[in-house]
Image 1: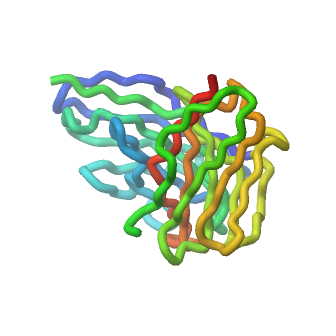
Image 2: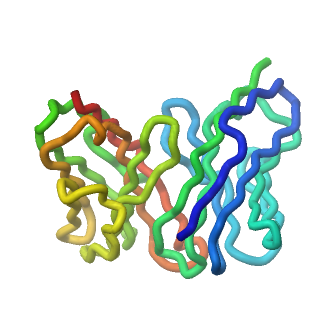
Length: 114
Length: 116
């Protein structure tokens, strides 16, 4: 069975600090990888996704993630966070064939302070 | 509509009461998924549909949970004889169905169920 592990439960950063959120998955086959973000009071929104090709993917709002197949990892990064990045971040995977349920990590709460 | 719509946004039920949660997917989306999100946790899969066919219901926690999508569009998640442990946010997501960008799931705002 697939599983997703997010290493950090709560991260607190000052504005302009760099961000890296860890995500590791467990699955025997090829997967699609996603990062979703949930801003306070809002619904889950797609931040970025990886299907195939270049393992470094760029998403909205300056976020990027790198797929390292040998490490089963898909870490999220941002060079300089802003107060508006305060949110909950979820890593998710599903089978490469698509049209299958997502398996989510438990999420990482990011708090950015001025 | 422009996005996935769920109703009601909030539901308070007395233990033992039946509830029905509605999901309107994005128009034209073939696949529809239900997830349950407990406080402080990530969403967990309940069931999903491709058009009107329920392809997987392995995540439904008990036979008190039932979902349907009779015309391949709107879906209803029904919980019978609610228990306190059913308290959670119930999320609906839809996708075009397929590989690549057709695989992207778009989420509704969820229904927060509180069972007293």
